[in-house]
Length: 608
Image (cartoon, rainbow, N blue to C red; front, top):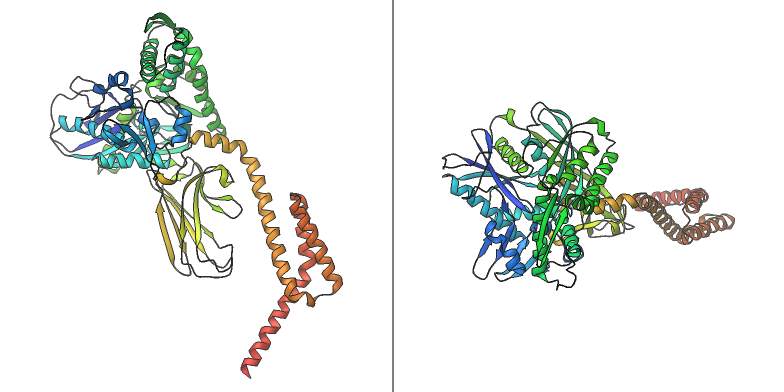
């Protein structure tokens, strides 16, 4: 990689890899991707910010503050953006920060600098990287591409976009990290076949299945865990050292926790290159071996491969069909990770580009392609939706409009109607997830379409359209045809129950079959109840049209159907609904004839 030593006068485009542990920035110089370093030739910027009383310290200058002032030093913010307080308390029970969430769902840290949001933290890191570029180039920054994990949800992507705006970064595209890695390896040129991108970073794990065909990037599927990465290796190793050094008697406060994590991180890095490492913490000196480290992290590594296995089954992919495997993220340097991935995929992964740098390089190359007027340089990205999207319908069910792993950008419309007579408004409740049941999905937002014309139930036409742009951001429009009422919203962070996407998919698929059966049964019960209500009203008005014998037969079948509903017997409900339909055909036929005759007579009277 080339480090720039002088200023250049040219139009500047940037690629930023905003990482959990480290962030990087790159540009294009003489048609080559170049990483931009600081004055000490360090291209990695620790994603750390210290919030002091009078100023903010970012990057390397803030590293020592992690031990000195942990309560005011925010690290790994990428793991926290788009998370609820409840999630953070559960997953990170001993964070040193004082945090809260406002009514709009934004996460705030209470620091010596005051109240600062997670979005502001990200914006300051992005602005710092932009300043690094400005100090090297005597020109205006034109365009920037920022990478995000493929499995970042809509809210997390929105937060990154907001942070870029606050930081004064002209963001033109959010690029999924796996796609960026493939671009960095030049796989968009003349490469055909299935490529796997295994991305294990500091705080997230992603696996993406790409189908490449000479410049066409088709994402077949993506999965991952936005709460699994190298930080977890540090935590589990810190806990191991804590017990091995017999430090149980030591008071476990924020500073001690930060010290243990720092020692663990240093030990992990050394174990990448050495079989044994001497560890010094407080008054304890000891040895930690690579075999010990492998043993305690093995389940975490296996978890990543389990995610790979599940996604391959989902799209019916045989490992033998895979042409290349790209390893991305600093955590892939851990020898056990490399060996397990190699054995799992039965081939040597591509590691010729530094795994810390590969995503930033791809981002700059993609930004260059977007800026280029030469269409031959363009690549076509066919990304996918990580989770299905839909709305709530009667009965507490989800009607899916856009399905998981659909390609984006995408626009889909479905028609709905009212469930009650004279309804003048409808609630559109937007949901994310694979379950058939509202209670098992994530609520993204809800809004009310008001002032629609009062009509009989089922006669109003309401078109609901979901649109997802190239950055994976969602907008929803509800349009009522007859009154021409329309409302459009974009998903924001205020309505999200910030659930881990991978856990959602795992839980959804575990219960999908049961949810489906439950939905079918409940819909049949709703249909039966509606039939009984309609029949009761009709008999009250027109029972005189049929014989007492026929009326008794109808009432007997009414009772049987009601009993089936009360007993929650699906097959009995289906059977008795069909029988009731058969015994009421004559009655409803007579009602129709009677209504027609009444209408004709009324017209004759009006003519006279």
